Length: 63
Image (cartoon, rainbow, N blue to C red; front, top):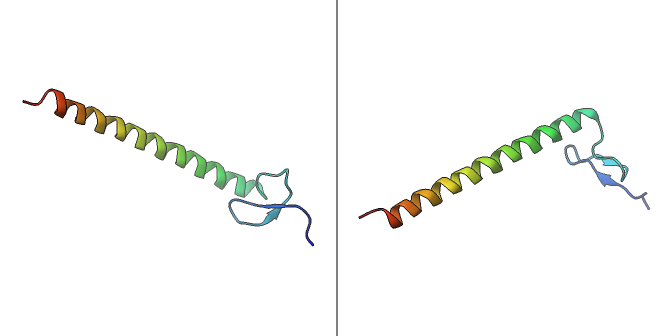
């Protein structure tokens, strides 16, 4: 039976439960991925707001 562990989210290497990643390299990759995900969510949010504004304009101000 193996000890309690989890896996690195970047390279899938087994790591102790109190660690986030297995190395500084993987931590850098994870940080970049999280930043990219935040940026993509913000872009999606802005596009949805623009779509809603256009839709509202077409519903209420179009003859």
